[in-house]
Image 1 (cartoon, helix red, strand yellow):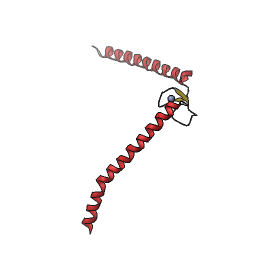
Image 2 (cartoon, rainbow, N blue to C red):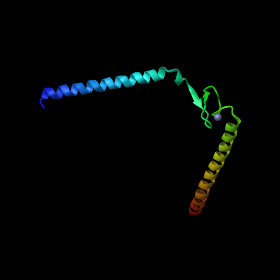
Image 3 (cartoon, rainbow, N blue to C red):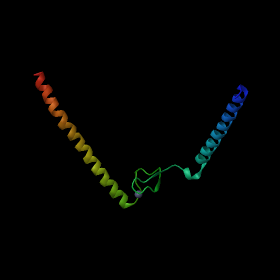
Image 4 (cartoon, rainbow, N blue to C red):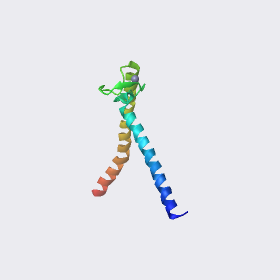
Length: 102
Ligand SMILES: [Zn+2]
């Protein structure tokens, strides 16, 4: 392959790449403009769309509220257990340190 041929090939590949990139960005722009992409969030339980203005993470459904409360409780229990576990590990070390200092 000659030098000029190589250059020509490189030019065409970059041109096609640029074309591809531009079509991708066009698609992205279209998606951004789309009405479907209106700002909203989803209920964490049933994942139906809810308005962003809604303060809670869930919809108005009672089942979702109950499930969410249950999850919240178990999460709190888990974090308490975690702290207790850390305490169980750290307290003997602290006692030993204090003993070593005295
Ligand atoms: Zn829901």
